[in-house]
Length: 254
Image (cartoon, rainbow, N blue to C red; front, side, top):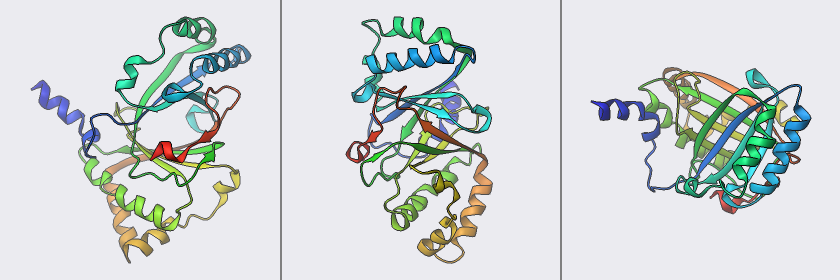
């Protein structure tokens, strides 16, 4: 019985076939700084990342969330790295002690940790680019309708690659989804000018152009049945707080 229940709970993770036993994951830690200790927090996390998370799979970047219910919070992102790499993540040579002494005391007693599986085949990183802004769209899937929603992603990817081949974006699924937070899937756009947010949304027309007349109505009908809501945030990359630079290498995301 326990096996059956656990399998049911894992449905959102199983609807995309995993051809490999080890796959890329991003570790995201949402941090709320003590509002009276912002300077101390930023100084501590900057030094920590530059000491312990400045290169390789354990490299980390920090983003500042600029809107929504999480406005003003920080997102600490490590990876992509595999689950097996988690076993040898930095933990010695003062890593944990430094975090506990120079970062944690300047935060609030709240936080959130998520692990996002990266899907290279559905994503597009056509060239190297420098991070500045991320538009993060998180979708809450309807329970037992996950397969319907996930079935749309290949069609979305085809439209993006056919009609917007130069635009970098990533698709991710939450490895530890919760019915309470509604963050089962994420689509992330990367852009360097806020003018991007004011551009006309041509995706519906592009979708019909690729998949045929009436296909957009079908798409929206499936979205209505298989999702409960969408949350959007803009994250601003903070080079001063990050270990990794702003440069994203396309070859490392394929």
